[in-house]
Image 1 (cartoon, one colour):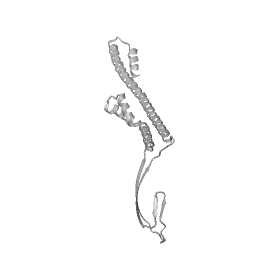
Image 2 (cartoon, rainbow, N blue to C red):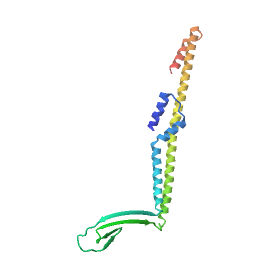
Image 3 (spheres, rainbow, N blue to C red):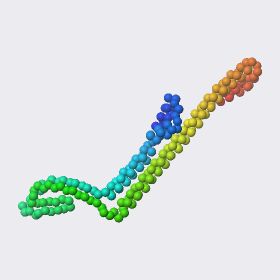
Image 4 (cartoon, rainbow, N blue to C red):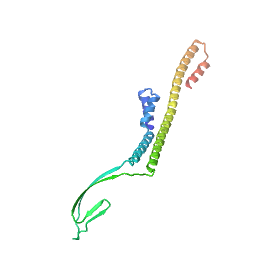
Length: 194
């Protein structure tokens, strides 16, 4: 937000350009860290939901293994299978190719509950993002209103100064002509200073 104020100050003072509220709003939206963090939170929840959806699909995996077994004992014990690994003591070189298909037939409703919770979490994150955006725009509008008020006050005071200077010169001319008193000219000088 400080970067935005710096650019606003630089734009007004150095370049002398008028800045509309729409330009400020767009710049604040593009440069706000709070909004970008909320947007990232929403994207994380969307990816998490996609991950939950992926559990509904079957899983296919393929594997290849090349092994060399050397049995210290000269007797052969045949083939031993432990999990996905098969050890054959009779053959020293073994190559295997495996293809595996997994699909959960019944989830007991847990996956659908996770999907519902994920969709609700995405809705909450989007609402938080909108709330943060509204908060940012309100802050920006407050600053913009103050800036417009200060600009109007500056224009009003500069116009008042030029009118008071003109009035002072007229009263000096009237004093020179003898139509105005010295006290009246002094009062106008004091108003000019104020």
